[in-house]
Length: 169
Image (cartoon, rainbow, N blue to C red):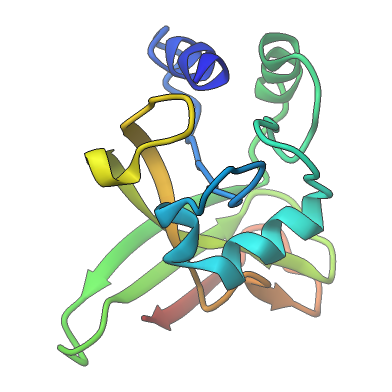
């Protein structure tokens, strides 16, 4: 709860450059976190990838460390891509369909990965109560598309070239 409050205070400070992704990892317990139970495979895979062994653990741009100083270092770096469009498509109508188009602002190395997260902005539900009494959660990752591994680009992406990725859930 204290970690969430600190992160939310930081996010609300007006930087405008942060996207929070809250992964409910299902530990330390006691009891089962219903937000984790909704998507154990994706969340478990990302926790293993990052080496998360305890909660809470916070990363800025996949880096551990002091939130403010890590943010200040990372925000000085130029963006490697420009996201041209992120669209929700209607076809097929029985799925959530996402199209992401981006343009490389510099050469993107081979084996780079695009991760697309479906996020619920606010969960305010007494049934999702944490062991610390917290009942309101923001930016909760519900699904990773196409999966926790993401979309890998095996070849380099040249500067000024564009790529489009279509995924469905």
